Image 1 (cartoon, helix red, strand yellow):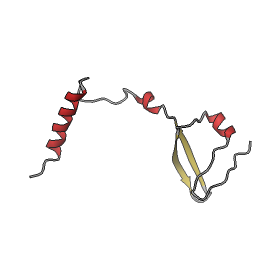
Image 2: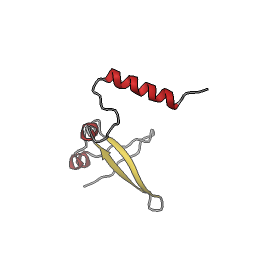
Image 3: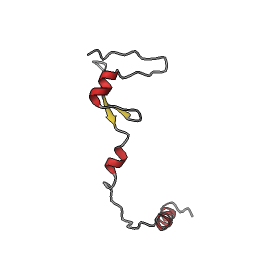
Image 4: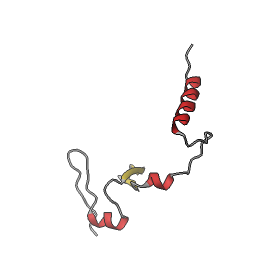
Length: 87
């Protein structure tokens, strides 16, 4: 497999189709830059799927348990007002 590509004048690269197929990369996915090895001029890339939000849904907990978004916004507003109140 030839995974070589050229950097454009805008600093962009194209991920070769074979690599995209193997890693199941699709339009809308994001790329995260990881570990950088300066001496070897290497970097690790991680693909973040566009559906990551749905995968993470429900993974965070909240002290506020209310499905009424208007009430939640009201409570949040009061909490932020207390936190950032200026005298």
